[in-house]
Image (cartoon, rainbow, N blue to C red; front, side, top):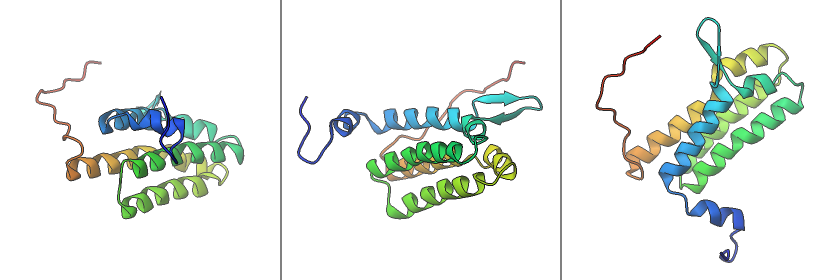
Length: 143
């Protein structure tokens, strides 16, 4: 498989992915970062809040991973205003998250990655790139 001029091999591999596949990958990443762990009291946190406990480097790592979601949105053709809004969510999460203790609590509550993936999903559905996700059944919670 040869890369086109100006396109890396990684980009070319991802270029074959449909918007649905990319969005599914981003939703999984957002889930892992923001809501993968269930705490007592029915509260959810993710790796973002846990890795963010490591001073400085933890917040740098999670901000870099969160930036990947914004990069994928740009690659999918999201408009500049949406990219700016998503980048602002990542910046707020990164800056406030860097404050010891209070930032970690903020990370657990703000969930910037879930917000950004939802913003991207809404845009893709409105633009017709992605079919709206509709469930035609009634869900029942079994405890």
